[in-house]
Image (cartoon, rainbow, N blue to C red; front, side):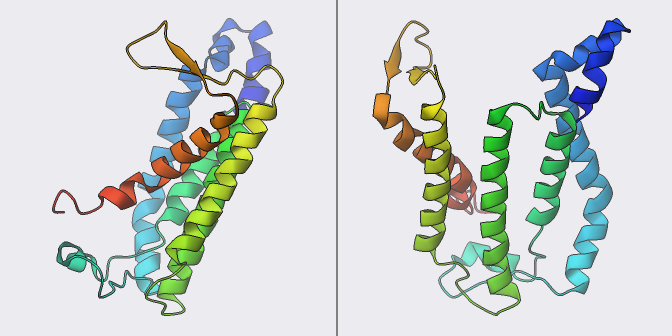
Length: 198
């Protein structure tokens, strides 16, 4: 939003030209989300505690996770809201890639909210079953992959790190590749949680 409001002013004042740079807007979007979380975080945690929305540990959880019992849950609401607000403020809203990222963010956030809701409000020990959660995640990622490969002139090549002149044209395999990257990245924290003993 700010990009669309302030960047056109560069014709009158050259200082507004900085809004065309993605790095500039990325830094300020990051700072915006950080400030939102720092300002609203303590209040939001107290709200979650007052509403008694706390983590429940099931019997299948490793012993290292037992210390998390009673930790306020649904904190993702604040984080996702901060990211969404920062994105809407600083991103180029006519860029399709921004909306694809927002689609994944919101879809996965709603899935996480339903999971936490079932665990904290409804008393379910499982929440959203893992198979259903992964199915929804893969379907949402498949939609993004399909849209990407459907774009005219979209480059399906991936560059191999450290070999700048070597690239692979994935062709139809680009969609499964996108699915694995998105779902793998989204679940990376869950998969490694507790491996460090914390």
